[in-house]
Image (cartoon, rainbow, N blue to C red; front, side):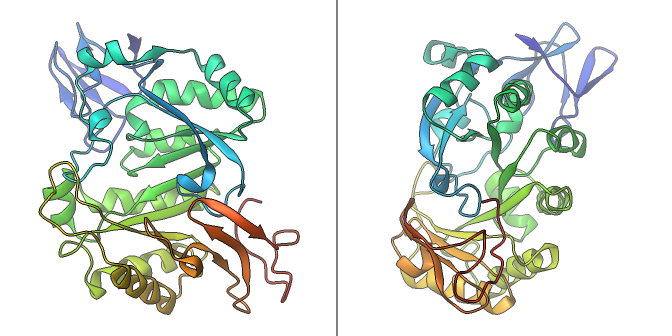
Amino acid sequence: MKEALLYQHDGSEVICGLCMHQCRIKPGRRGICGVRENSDGTLVSLVYGRISAEQIDPVEKKPLFHFLPSTLTYSISTIGCNFRCLHCQNHHLSQADSAESRWNSVLRSPEEVARTALSGGCRSISYTYVEPTVFFEFAYDCCLAANEVNLKNIFVSNGYMSRQAAGMLVPVLDAINIDIKSFTDDFYKNICGARLSHVLDNVRFFREQDVWVEVTTLLIPGLNDSDDEIRAIADFIVDVDPHIPWHISGFRPTYRMLDRPPTSPAQLQRAREIGIAAGVKYVYIGNVHDGRGESTICPGCGNTVIDRRGFMVAGNSMTGGSCPSCKTKIAGVW
């Protein structure tokens, strides 16, 4: 066990300041994430260094399309999550019991994580699969170790970390993909167990702090796929920065949401068109194969500058981060 960061005492209880749930935790109990416990008045992380999932991925799989394309990233995760999404594709990790998971994890130091990334030919480490904020102490130490050997750091996040946690991340984090799961509080409350406003605040905060930001929305038929809601998300992105890439992904029935059909390609294409019409410069379609919807199109002349097939880059014609045809600068970290 590792003493947690960002908490305070209130008598025998502790108040966790890591995410916006601000859990008040009685002795011997855990917060919503299931992996932070009040141990005799000390808040401890139960998963420090306990990696339950690891894999080398193309960075495009995070998804990040405008951050070091065609490079590899070392993806790691513990268990636990501060959301309870009914459609979670990684529920075997996010909703796992920490006592059981200790038999299914490997113990690693931050320095070992950095060395593994380097030996695998990776340019970055991604903290992903579950909400990485719940293993913040370990992720933060890994970020420091990565910085020491010139590796980049990526969060794949639901965006529900506290402002204090976000502020600690800014100096060590290079990129973040944040889910905007819906644009209604009802969806966040009933499907995820959270609130929308905190997520939107963090999208804006990280972009203002010059961390590279991309946004993902999983389009679920009948729940968050109306034209009005898609347009509202697009308008928000444009208000923050129209150059933030937006990944609109197709839903597949899973976990506790088996009563919904998969998202059709036509629905995804319609959402992409709405996003582009609203002024989002880069809108992508995910979880289905769609050549133009997966490729980076120059917003200046319409030329394809990065040709993708799934998570693989088939061609990259950019020169110095710009379109070779019209010289328009393509936003990103190249």
